[in-house]
Image (cartoon, rainbow, N blue to C red; front, top):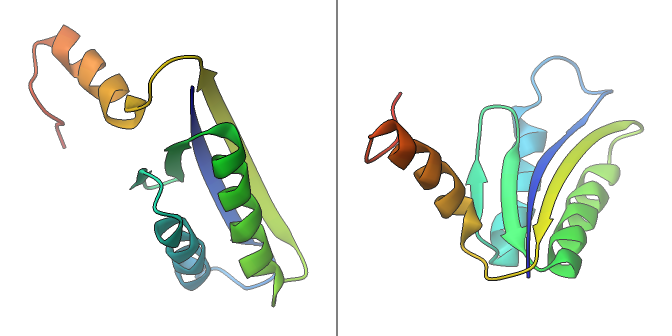
Length: 104
């Protein structure tokens, strides 16, 4: 079984430059060892449901240390079956377009 979650998390009380806080959350995600992909508007994380939710909670707790208000947006696609969908899902779409890899 596999959950692919797209997480967007940032404090709402730290001004306009939030990349230091996003970097702190990404460090938590990296430390988890779960497959992940950083995107321009969020980070996708793949793993078992409880593993992914634990990482989301850990990201929240990291930002909570010095933030009075935090925005969290979470979308999850859970599916029974094997993992590896973080790479397989985009590859399947690109294959149907006749492209072998991502385009910028």
